[in-house]
Length: 113
Image (cartoon, rainbow, N blue to C red; front, side, top):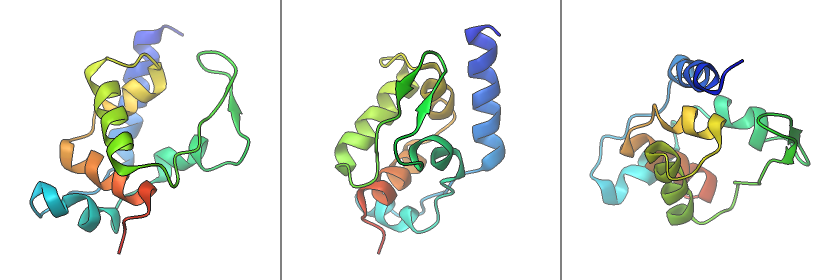
């Protein structure tokens, strides 16, 4: 399967799963959206302790729970912009808005209140 096709499939899956919509301003968007994020597309890889995947090569999937919110936001935005090269993450992040990214980052940083 080509990388472009894989990215397109992952982007379609990300859109199909749906994600949270923040309604507050950016300063509070992450905390409010964190309550409603749909982490199904993240949990398949990042939610399994010690999980390794074989796409695009065999590697250990990093733990994202408990990471710094700013780091997670920056990483997702870098994937979306093509500044990070992992094909699966580029496909997923490519479909996310800034508000959705803030929600995921807040959720995984533990900022959900």
